[in-house]
Image (cartoon, rainbow, N blue to C red):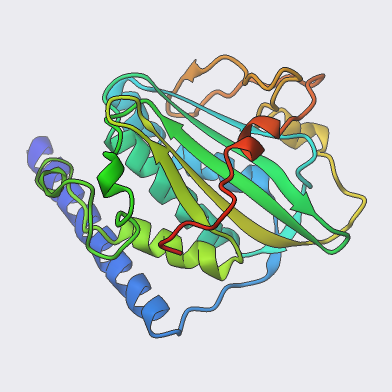
Length: 256
């Protein structure tokens, strides 16, 4: 009976997810979705997204790690719900298409002014990768890199299309670097308003929740994910974004 209940619960969850994706895409397509502008913490947003998928990560025996650079402000003005939605979709895809290895999520400052800041997020996995000739349309609605993945892994083909639209609404862009067998790294940027221009560092409480990048640009060692997602921190580490900035293409992705 427990097995039947678990199957029913999984089916209900999948159906709810499908309905939410269709509703979100319909709202965006009709121009009826508006982004909020409320104070939020980028660090907490990332942490919540990782914790939400902790159970699936644990079941697959994967490792997961998150890091946020020290110069990302503690609080910004933006839409945390939609930012979390993009992160959840990209991390969820990384978990879905990775059977062995790890997933790494990072956020750094791409550029900033006195009133606005552009954050650059990345989600890197060691999964199956994406063929070069398929990368051009994976952000289109109802399209996937391989139609067979729908039968094996599920999904509607709407997730990345929704991400693309939401990122565009946040004033950013999204793209992917990938090769078959070597995993994928999804990048996206978002523009947020600065609450206090002088607030450029995390307080100690949030700093211990998400590890910062080291001076050499190497992240802290990955840790095995569990139900609570234990993430190491290094209080004396400083941030660097040179590696990620070098990966930013000179022109926006063609599908944005």
